[in-house]
Image (cartoon, rainbow, N blue to C red):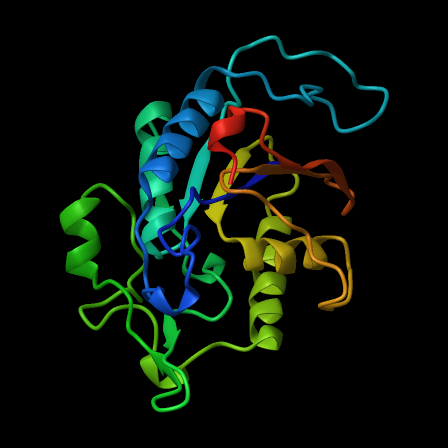
Length: 243
């Protein structure tokens, strides 16, 4: 199974000069919308830089077809991920499926400073998501009360790494398939997921950084191993759109 881990396009929070102006569930900037469209076109018609289709060094038959041949597309319930997946799904003819566990570290929250401190928010409700993304597949845990428990406030890093391990184990169950799976997720969670995949102990000392719409490819082998094909590839973007 081939896994493409993709960071969402630039959000309004990503582009802020003053981080005190953050919102709890940001949209995409105009630049981000351009990034998502270019990413979608690349996944549909571009060439995967690592196009070997075998699962061993001896199996080197080249796949000359255009596009990444994504079979399944997942995104988080965060607005920036929903929007990025929308462009991909439209271009590839795929229906995005929301996977709650691939949301960004922290969940839906804002740090209001010394007076109010960290406040949790519920995220988009089921009706709000389906009003804008009517074809998306949603889990039953997204309700009219949203999907994030405001009482949790901000998720801590140990909980984020625990989620990443759960996601990795779920993906490992599909290792023997010939599926190409893409997940549209977030920078902090991508770091945690990479550490789960390669058995790297959670640590803030090393961080696996990804630019907006950057792609990392991991090939899962039926024998339990994994091949790291590439990390943080963003050469589909022109220089003016890298963020």
